[in-house]
Image (cartoon, rainbow over all chains, first blue to last red; front, top):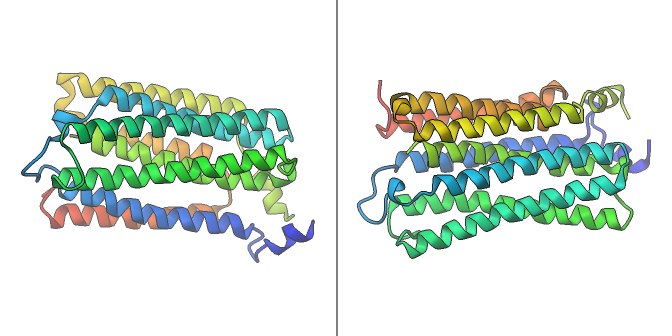
Length: 194
Length: 101
C-alpha cells in the first residue's frame, strides 16, 4: 500500500474519498428533490406564457436523453479500461463520455434559446421559473462533469492515470451516473407527465 | 488495500453486463416515448411511466454505480437521503393539494 492510499483509508476499510462522494450524492438527492417538488407544486398554476403542452419538444428531448444514457455506458467502459490498465481505450471512452456530455449540453442550449424566442423566460411564469431553475441546475452539473472528464483526460495524457488511479475515474463516474439518473427522473416528470 | 476493497473491485460487473444494461435502458426509453404518443395509454400514463423511470433509475444505480455489488455502507448512505427526498416530495404534493387521497 502506498502512503497516498494509506492516508485515505478509514476504520471501515473503505476509501474516504468514495464515502465522501456518496455523501455528496446523497445531499444532491435532497437538492434535486426540492427542485423537482417545487416544479410539481407550481405545475399548471401559470397565468401567463406558453404551457408545457405548447412548448416542450418530446422527440428532441428523447434524443438528448438517449445521448446521456449512452454517455453513462461510455463512462463505465472507461472505468473498465482504466481498471485493466488499457490506457488507449480509457482515453477513447473518457473522450466519448465528455463529447456526449457536450452534445447533451448543445441540445439543452438549443432548447433554452428556442423557448426564450417563443416567450418562455425565467420571469414570465411559474412554469418558466421552475423549469429553467430545475433543468438549468442539472445542465450546470453536466457542465461540471464534462470539465472533470477533460481533467482526467489531461491526467491520462500526462501518464498519471493508470490502473492504480482507477478510483479517480470511479469517483468521476459516480458523479456522472448520478447526473444521468437525475435526468431520468426529470425527463419523466417534466417532459412525459405533462 | 483491505480485503473488503479487493472484494469490491472484483465484484464490479463485466463489459457484457454494461452493454446489456445499456440495451435495456434504450428499450425502456423507447417504450416510454412510445406510450406517451398512444392515446389508449393516457389513463395509465403516470403509473406506467413512473414504474419505467424507476426501473431505469435502479438499473443505472445498481449496475453502473455498482451499488448492487459494492459495500452495503454506500447503499445506506445513498438510500437514506433518497428516501427522505421522496418523502419530502410526497408530503409537499399533499400539502399543496397537487395530489389528494
